[in-house]
Amino acid sequence: MQKPADVNQEKERLRRWRMVMGNEPVPPADHSANLEGLDVELTGTDAEIDAVLKAVYDSDRRSGLGSSSPRVNRWLSDIRRFFPKSVVRLVQRDAFERLKLQRMLLQPELLEAVEPDVHLVGTLLSLKNVIPEKTKETARKVVRKVVDELERRLRQPMVSAIQGAIDQSSRTSRPRASEIDWDLTIRKNLKNYLPEHKAIIPEKLVGFRRKRSSLRDVILCLDQSGSMSSSVVYSSIFAAVMASLRSLSTRFVVFDTEVVDLSEHLNDPVDLLFGTQLGGGTDIARALKYCQQLVQRPEQTILILISDLFEGGDVEQTVRRVAELTASGVQVICLLSLADDGTPASNESLAATLAGFGVPAFACTPDLFPELIAAAIRKQDLGRWAASQELVVRGTEKPNEVELPPELRVPEEISFFRDQKL
Image (tube, rainbow, N blue to C red; front, side):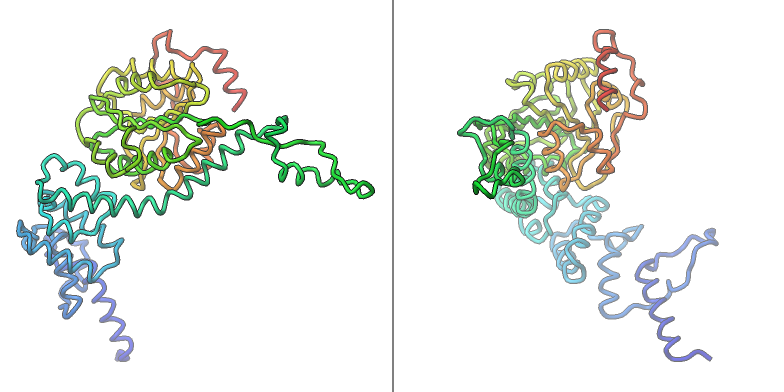
């Protein structure tokens, strides 16, 4: 005979199992299915939660959300009542993808009820050309809310990382009198203190080179094809932050089959986002050609190509542009994505080709991006940096996979010295 405590534990176990599995009928042929707990009747809050989830995940969608705006609004209110924000965002994202509800975001009353996140911003940007006038202001408020939240989280780490790298890279041991950092110089020479003279002999001077208006030029070249929506959001925020720093000169270029320079909008990331156009083809070669024209100081320029490398244009021209940029001294980095979504599908063949020119291709999370920029400013080996962060550098497994024209191949002597450096 079971004890009351054991009976209660068994009921609770079956209730949890029922909440996880739902009560969808199992095909008769599926003898391996565990039917235990599926016949448990839910009541109260459990029944309400089950109904909310069933509207999205019921395979035959008999109780789906349909096309009724009031019904979707009630459903959005319910999931907010039962789940924390992180879960709400996940469930509503699944609802829009599974039930094709994107068009309902064109209604301001529904848009106001949605829990905003990066993916929602990407969806709104893809719909911006069909958003009616009555919804546009609401859409901008939603985008503004997400951007402000992300900027609060990302700005300070970005500013600190860049300023630290700039200070370190501009430090010199042979400063002029006006460039001496006396605080650092004194601390570096404390061992040379002479008690009898009550003086420190400054054996090593530490200072900073005379600062120019900008110490690095950064060009963000962003693929705005549909698969890059999260990267578009994060890139716009980081570009706006970098543009606010006097030590950097920042340009922001987006492309599909056309190239658009949005640098004049860098003072407002929301304007920057609404200047993008998600979807369309991809012409990396054309974008790189435009970026080449922006380079004034190759040795001080960092060009970040954010793309999955699926080139819809001339691949040979893309390789040629990268070869010319790196040969001139520009530091070229390829980010397959700048998002929290993990490593996306990418063109391994082109990544392998770029690796031959010392251009690493890897996905980067927003939290790591400030450190990446700092490493680039210090001119570190970014392939090694990525490996130290456990990021997978694409194309390095088979660097000779692509046969290049003779004029684009990396000279053997360059390869030798690069290998010696590594």
